[in-house]
Length: 513
Image 1 (spheres, rainbow, N blue to C red):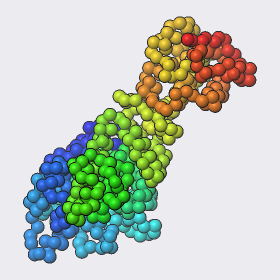
Image 2 (image 1 turned 180 degrees about the vertical axis):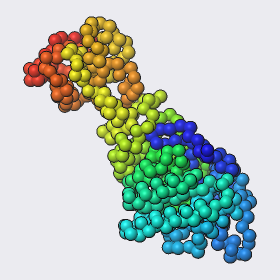
Image 3 (image 1 turned 90 degrees about the vertical axis):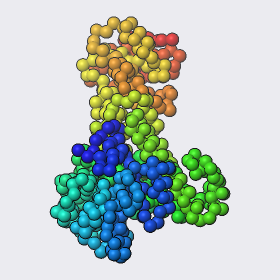
Image 4 (image 1 turned 90 degrees about the horizontal axis):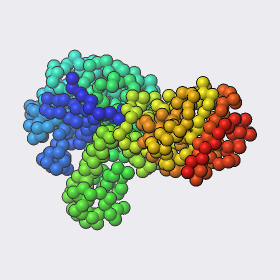
């Protein structure tokens, strides 16, 4: 087994990926490097950033060594790096330039000679082409390349990566993911998102990510090619993606662009650095602007990489404590494009997060109506937790604001009411589910929901009462109301509505306080 899952929240997982050069903890971001254009040196990556794995391009190394008439040697020796090396195949060059001078068998041979730890086979990227025929051909060719590569592979100590193509076409993405899943690859990778990343088309990325992941067995680690902006990483991890890569940290630095978890800024737009990394703590934007260009690029690249790594660490912590959804909600409000991505994710949430842990150690934050799509709340909706039992002939309804309820008050209420029916006939008013069985008050997530609504508005209470009436099969049900006398949660007006307008018999009314 090359992949071990340790923790899960939503579909995000912390895992261990075992390679011949070491163990990689996922989610993991591979900084992409070109050994001839290093902005941050290998030693700096190892010492300052504690990088355990880097990504480079097998095709470009092949070209360079052929042009120089040199024999290909161990990539760890070439880079002076004893960690995990992952090589891309040249697919990105095909996406950019249309073709390369290499066959899939050539790339496998090169990667084996390089002694890589993780090697991607040569794919034909779909990109975001709107032409279905061209997209279909890219999927067909990638599958053919996979079969040719598998026949060529000799070394089984390398983790081989099967790319998934299909672009924006759901049918093709699904087909490609299923085909690649059946070929025995150690890792699968969703290809062609780079152009969407560059356009900030995050909602389309979510659609692609959901479709591809749905057709991949859960035990296989999956890579999201070219995802390198912290704005969207938490979303992609939540979908179940484990590995990411990009040269964005360096490419953005060349353009004087400064990455944050909330967006990207031009250096000349900044008066202050909203960050405390080693670079931002030492320099001001003005000082960086006045530096010699190469030095400025290096420092900006370092900051950008620090920012990406910080986001990965926060995502891991969120998975551990079960609050990944909260992080996504926070990130979603940072930019209209991430908000669009969140709406897309929330649309899929009830279907794709059905195995997410329901019971959490920490409180469940409910920000607004979109928070209702978080798995814990969806689970309770499916359980019809707010549905009144039809067998109840006697209902006891507790109208006390939840922040005033306590274990002691609930216990006292139960002890002082002589129940001649099952305890499920005792309900209290919950902000999000209406009338909830009193036993649920003691359980997660009911006792852990934290929301901005301290008091239910009158229109919401009326909505709950109307729902109650529609739930009751018989108007002969006797109702005892317990309310907080000092609260306006249930006024005389609403009691009158129940008894007069709705025809519900109020047997008793108990005022507390």
